[in-house]
Structures are given as structure tokens and as C-alpha cells.
Length: 73
Image (cartoon, rainbow, N blue to C red; front, side, top):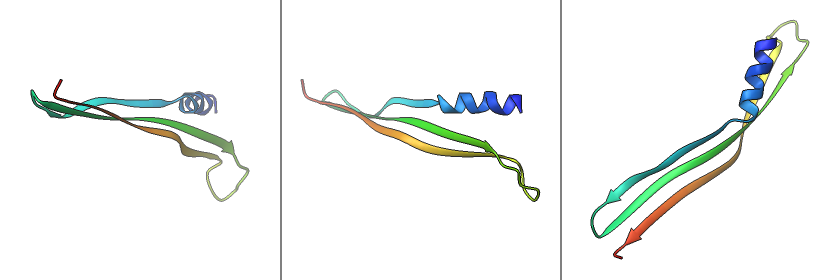
């Protein structure tokens, strides 16, 4: 149970960022795309004799699309 609670605390604060990756990069123009995700997890222990007692529900709390571009100067 101790390890489950530690895992749960890590998931509650988990955020992931995929840095902007270059999609198009020429001397005249460029386009970079990326994403940022924030997850929220809810864990509970249920007294159920027919299934596992530990349950974890994950939700995507927030997501952002990162776009950066340039054209000419």
C-alpha cells in the first residue's frame, strides 16, 4: 500500500512537455510544433471481494498546443 500511495503522489503532480520540434525549417520560413499535457489521477481502495481493491482513474486535466513560426525577417 505504501508504494501505491507514492506512485499516486507522483501521478498527481505529473506534467509532460514535448518541446517544440521543427516541422519545416528553411532559410525563408520555419514552423515548430509541440504539446504540453497535465494529468490528474484519483486513486481509491474499494472493498470488493470479486475484483482488485486498488483502483486508479487518470484524467487529462489540461492540454496545450505550442506553435512557433517565422516567415521572412
